[in-house]
Length: 72
Image 1 (cartoon, rainbow, N blue to C red):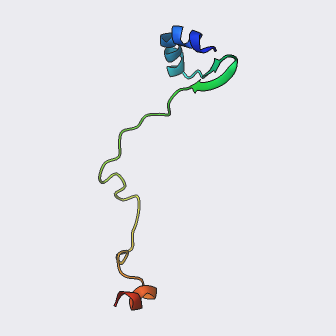
Image 2: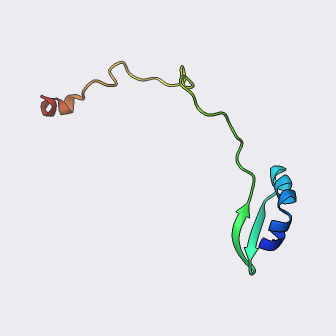
Image 3: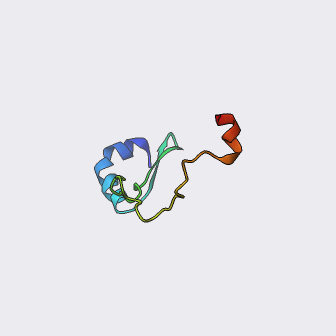
């Protein structure tokens, strides 16, 4: 679809894009952009989202034995 046609029909293109359709926008016959649906939106992450889903060793923050001499 040409850039002028895309500009003229933007509202219709957005409705169709929301429905899952993709469009390639051209300028002088050359593809320059793609209009496609965004991925599924999800809520932002928050503290505690991973609680119970990951495990860390109790000594995770303890110095590694290999570096002990460099830390003294």
